[in-house]
Picture: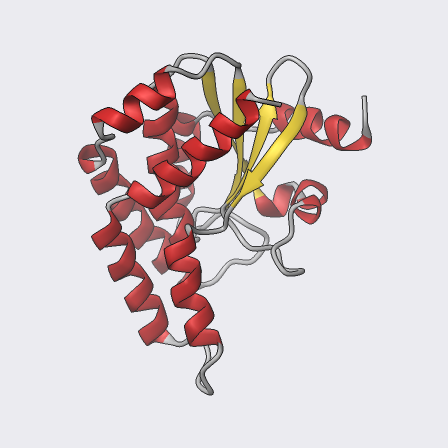
Length: 205
């Protein structure tokens, strides 16, 4: 077993199902807390907003017939291991979509780990040197081999943020608002398409 596979195995032992993750975040909120090593009113506020977003997405996200057929055609068993935190706005828009995607094929399973509790895993999957989340690691179930990764956001959302980063004012509240509008308009379709493609590519490995 490679060092990465050992790390994945350890992380999976410390992981949550989607339902358990949602309950964990809610229980912390009831105590006025958020997930993660840092606690602040702002992070608790973001977590509260994200709870509402995720509740809405759980009810409204629907896969297209084409996406459902592509997912059902997958034969390999994979674990979608997602690094996340309850306060992360991108995670709130993406994790419920991944959950719907996994529900389409019983060969797929979703496991969630908290970034600040799994720093070694996070550091294997940095984005431009940053601990950006959510980050999905596609794991072959039988071997615990990583077959690819994805995140922290779909290409369209990433391009929007890159555009703001290039401006003198950088990432400000306007950028965050525009990103949430982008997610609302996209309805999870980019996330479904990009992760389904990742899964299809892994089938051929």
